View 1 (cartoon, helix red, strand yellow):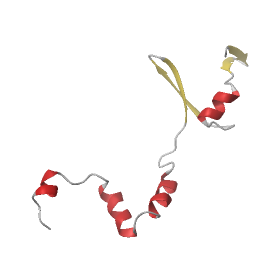
View 2 (cartoon, one colour):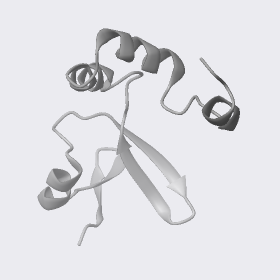
View 3 (cartoon, one colour):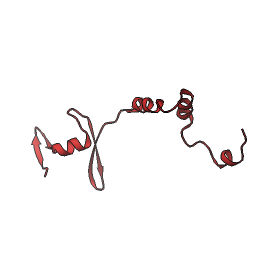
View 4 (spheres, one colour):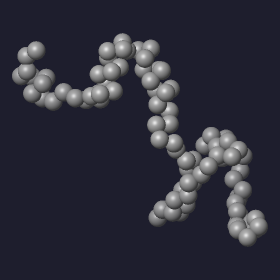
Length: 89
């Protein structure tokens, strides 16, 4: 069970090691605090485009360069019913 403790002029809470490992926090991880109706949500700061490089690398193994470019530009779900049923290429 966690409880609030004085840390300097502030209050702090120690997060049990098992929870830290479960959520993948590392020492010096910057955190964001958000108050919700259910309580306090603590999450790591996410950098813009974080994880994109790994995603591109993993997708590049499955697709040709042309397919990668098309997907980046248009996404996965670009066809509508007209494209599928009526349009002739």
